[in-house]
Amino acid sequence: MIAYIWMLLAISSTFAIPAPAPNTFAIRLGSPKLKRSNTTQQPPSYAILPVSTRDNDNSWTAAIPVGTPPITVYLQVDTGSGATVVLAPYQPSLSQTMKKEPGDDITIEFASGFKVSGPLVRDVFRIGHITIPDYKFLAGTNITGEAPGNGILGLGIKSPIPSDITIGTPLLGIQLVKGGGGQLLFGGIDHSIIIGSITYEKQTVKDQWIIPLKLVFTSGGVELSADSRIKPNRPIESNGLIDSGSTVVYVDDELANAFYRTIPGYNISADGFYTIPCDIKVSTLPVVKLLINNREFPIPRADLVFEPTKENPKQCLGGIQGTQPDPNQWIIGDTFIKNYYVIFDRGEGQIGIAQRSDVKYD
Image 1 (cartoon, rainbow, N blue to C red):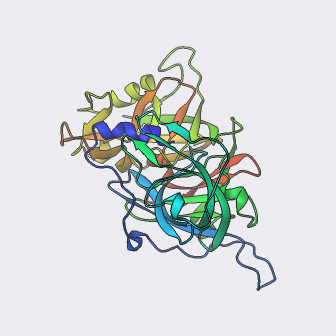
Image 2: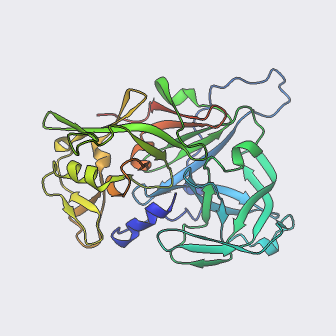
């Protein structure tokens, strides 16, 4: 759900632009431990798509060849969006396999002011070793505002990619690696990088990757959470959209304010974003945990300090922000996702979370 990422542009000194060259992408990790067919002539029952990030983990992108002849585009990985948008260098009129969908051009506008319009088309999409001959997406020919590089790879629950790739089970496993690579695994789970068990939670909204959860933080030995200790009669549990297209975690202002009041030197920028001193001693920050299906998932405290702001390079954006007006709807972005292996299970209507062997937890 990129609308929330772009709001950071007003005060952020950098923003991740999709990598211009394939050699910036990490190679795939070890082969996933999956059940495979006994027929060795069949292709693997999964597809691996490497991803990469730049500029302080603002976003992760995947290189995807589109059309005929293939043009490689770098698309932002976005589990909060059900629509895929492809911008230049792809030009639909130059692809021999492009088929325009009936109807007029459509327009999509995001909260940041980024607006894109163009025809709905079908064309060849290549995900790892899998070729989708007629994948449907918006070919953006007219844009207004700051564009997300070459476009968006929509991986929301309405996205057609997992169902179009008939490779085993309807699963998507995501590993976002801090400051570098990672992978998307379509059709299975990469158990080789998982520590311990996987915790699953059912969706609460049918057409979005939203699950019930709690956010708890501890400062000075005192535990606070989103309940009556912050506001009377407030529900202890909220719903979180697990959104790889959002850079940080977004909660409501009341909870964010309670959190930052425990941090010396915090401030609120002119644009309304919470900031903390860039040189703060990480060990003094509150301990932040998401509770999912009664299991604790801590966010490493180093990830609570994001990049410096333009207006004051000594103040850094916080990894938790408070722009959500509804206390019952949070957005769980990459501040959290990049520390875990996240499984999007369309078949069972659930999300799985597991610790990773490549992440150091507090």
